[in-house]
Structures are given as C-alpha cells and as structure tokens.
Image (cartoon, rainbow, N blue to C red):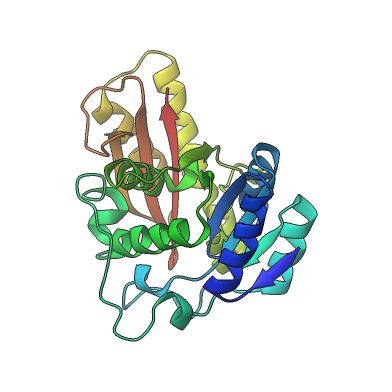
Length: 280
C-alpha cells in the first residue's frame, strides 16, 4: 500500500495496472477516515482488482466561514485504515498540486444543486464537481464509490458523469451508523459529550418519518412535520432544512413515491450534521 503526492505518480501506477489488464476503483475522500469510508473501500476492493483512495481536503468546496482549517486530518491513521481494508494506493496531494497558479476552470451543475446543501453553501457543489472530475481524469477508474449520507452529492456526481460522458460507473453505498443510530461523519469529532447525545435526534426523527411512510403516509408535508416536531424536542438542535425531493433531480415533491429522498440538515451547537433516508 503506497501513498503518493503527485498526479504523475498516480498516473504511472494506474498505467501499469492497466497494462496488466487490471480493473480500478476510486474512493474519493477528504480523509480522517471512519467506518463509513471503510465500507466504500471494502466495496471497491470486492468489485475491482485495484483500489485508489484519494485523501484531499478540497479547499474550493469550503465557504469563507466554513471549517477548512479546522477540518480533521490524520494521514497515518488514514493509511492504517486503507491498508487494513485492502486498498492499494492513497493519493494525498497538496492543494497546489490540484490547483496550479492561475487555475480558472471549474465544473458546475444546475437543478440537482439548487436546494438542500446547495442552497445554503454557495459554491460548494462547484468545488465538489471540479475536484471529482479532476480525480476521475487523473485516476481514470472503472468505478467510483460514494456514500448515501451525502445524497445530494451522489445525485450531482451521477448527473455530471451522465452529462459530460464520463465512462465511469458510479456506485452508491448505504449509510453507515454508530450503534446508537448516528450517521458516521468526520464532523462528529466536533461534538461535545452533551452534543453527541443530542445529535441522536437526527436519526430518531428520520426513523419516525420512515415508520409513517411504511404505514402508508405519502404526503410530503406530513412527513416534514413529523421530523420537525421531533427535532423541536431537542434544545440543542437548530434546523437548517427538512426536504422531500426526487432523488434523480433533487427537486421538491408533494407525494412520496419510488426514489424519493427525505433529507435533513441540523446544527447541534455549532456543528452542522446531515442525514437522510431514501424511499425506494
């Protein structure tokens, strides 16, 4: 298992794999890996002959008031997890390797980025699409792996891959949760003990909503109200959004049908957490 820092090194290694007839999977991450990332790596290892994990805290997807400098980083910890899971290569570039001087070219999307996190984090998805497209061009994988927790990101990547004719299969992997239900996230490390306990209201509210849908409720407004009523019971929770959208285009729907995403973003103290469920 290797860590490389340059685009040239990655391309040379992948070229040798290709010459040997091997398939390649890519797991794009911002590092500080946890069991959620590990599930993506494991899926890639199962599907492909070789797996590349990118570890890159992408500066252009952070807004001016967001947590770029505070975002947790630990490459040695990441290396141990990737190696234990069977990954073959970590690409860990510096920002100047990915964004040389006078970098002026970006990949942007519409429709799938208009609501949810896209409405609240100006420029975020332009940064995501740009870095993911660069990683696709650098690594040239057969498949790339993304988690359902970032459902809007998943929908947006699928859209630009389709629109720009990337010959890459996008593989969605389920949310991985703590034993008590909290969705795994690198930002969970920001939570105090009290906040960590309060954060369970996210998954609890979604479970109540999902139970209502399973019992036949199809009105989006009613499902939103169920979630909102549950979140109101937690004093440390401040709702950013509660949305019911079509998973393909991330536009609001009034009725829950096949392929509907129920997504929330909630501040617990100063930490913004997201969670969701998909009605299939």
